[in-house]
Image 1 (cartoon, rainbow, N blue to C red):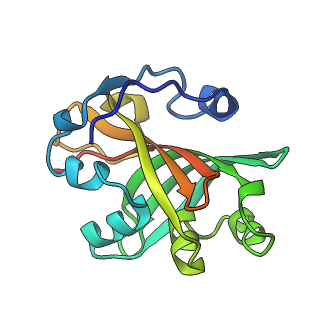
Image 2: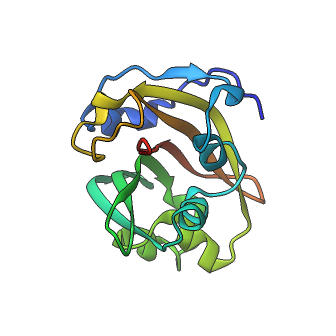
Length: 181
């Protein structure tokens, strides 16, 4: 699963600029440079929520840090947590294209109490995941988001699109994982 260096969409700018990630540059890397166990968690074509749940043996809870709803687009800065331990398992910036969802799913998304991947899986809406690129950032760029560990000085992430099986983009997501001890 090789990808070219992607260009982030302008629509992510309002939330990216004021996020915990801020102006930290993303160092784009080939999929083959994503090291274990992060390769298993990032280099695939399905949603992160279920992958994180399998890896951590726990359901995944959502915490929204900031959200902005404008013109059919819902932007949010989030962390996903293992439900039982409360440990953060992902930091994310997500642009959800609400007009691509049914009227029944929009209120559930806007409620902000369930990760988007879980909502999609529970709804039965056919969709796919299309990673656009993989990257690293210095561990200190998300200081305070993840517990400090001896697991390394960089964090691995991906830029991903969730695409409806009938074509429209559902969401664009920057997903970053914590180091592992």
